[in-house]
Image (cartoon, rainbow, N blue to C red; front, side):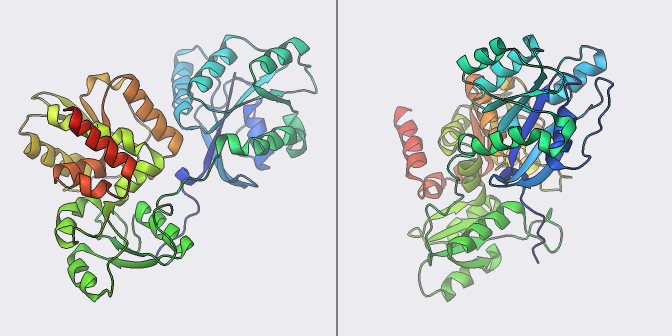
Length: 415
């Protein structure tokens, strides 16, 4: 039984609301959602931690609004709140900068710079328009910078924030863009796909883990023919089929066993590799895996997991990948692990970053983590890519993705 829990974080557009204390950020969120989601008070600094509210906002579909603490709090505790707000920067798909009247200065300019550098669409919302009037000079300045802005009155509720809501809808293509596919650009209607799904010890009884659910749903949407098997029954399952599958997708942990069962003529990849392409950058993460050849004794490797869970005895990130890396390289490597929203501001101390498929995160978050690593000249790769490489089947598992395979082969030629 699959338990439906609504669209996951990665399938929701993340819309962040930023600005100084007491400019009405929480009032705006409450007005948009027509619910008392965030505490509203005349006392500055009422919002201490980011407040998230998932909802449907047509025609955008599933979104999550994030109300953040003010960025102008210089007290010791306030600095911690600001840090929590800054952690949101890397995962928003649209940034709303809230101010009032002509209250515009270094804080707002800092936000503009950050979001422009991250190529995140921006809307400036001049709130409290019933009290303050925004000067034409400030409006002209934003126009010159090609920054969208609206004037709103959150105190009037939903009606008062309609200009902001309508502007967000008008910007749909800017921050939503062409819908990305997990695999429906390489699989067509009536194609036969075999999903190899080991029973994951960390998945509660009655469920399969999220990447498998999402792949299964997309295959159903396009009308593909689907066969699901555990790795233990895979050989018998393939013998029962009247034709070769168009594609076999396996959990990366079973790569070695599955690759020995599936004939070479049948394309093979993993859920993790699919999500490297869907959420991250398959080509960059394919390049990153080559760093394994250059690892030396004492090098530090960061294992980054997008979700948080209590690790089991043979945990993939804490046990299996480190074990396989040590066996492959023969080196005494140092491993560190981060989970969930945690990721180093400066990963340059690491020789390699190995990231999960990030099925619990979103594209903006994964893209910014990859961008940060590239800027710091730190190779970053993915669980599935790493496991395939360590089992000497990476070229085979990249065969459904010619551009990534080409990048990997060209790197081979350079060495």
